[in-house]
Length: 277
Picture 1 (cartoon, rainbow, N blue to C red):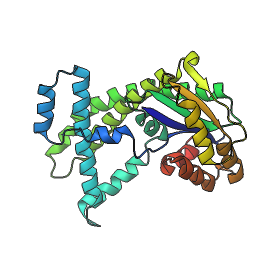
Picture 2 (picture 1 turned 90 degrees about the vertical axis):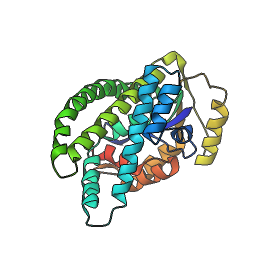
Picture 3 (picture 1 turned 60 degrees about the horizontal axis):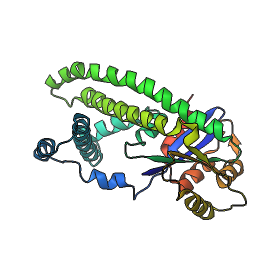
């Protein structure tokens, strides 16, 4: 499966790294195979001849599915209720999660190729080096935070004796899952962009409009299924950055929202890059 990554500077040395949202991604179809009950989970674990790592993945997907359903239930809770207040607290906690973590989590194990779109004024080697840096840094940080979160789970579980929802335990449980996914994404991304000899650079000239540029990209990359990373300079992205204007806070919010709309990015995560140190 190929993932389209979009890379561009937003403020000084702060760069945005984000993955385009693909509603037809195979990940959506694979999520349908996730067991939804303990009976289904036990059946899949005992009936399949999978390795231990795949069984762990299955259990993690099951827990993730349960957490997502619980979060949806909190979101639909009546205004002013306890569940609604917990949902508001969760949103505040999630707002503090770094955008780089969300980006690394989006690089799943199914990704076998990344197509990196970046402004045409940037050097391809610099873009690849920044990708390697964020991937390598992610492997170190999220490995450390993963062990830290796991060590806190028994401590926060003690609060279950209180007659209130154990918010600390479920938050640490989510952070454990999130760091594990980000660690996997870091390792996968590092694997895809590390070997320079297996990276293909493309240059597009006299290409205007997102549709023409996308068609050109699809045409030239269709025969590169075995290449793990493809770097595609974009004149359109360069134009969006310059035409949007810059402020003291970096790239203007209007320009960022336009880029997010055209390249199907999550604007909340992209704006976090501009505000991060």
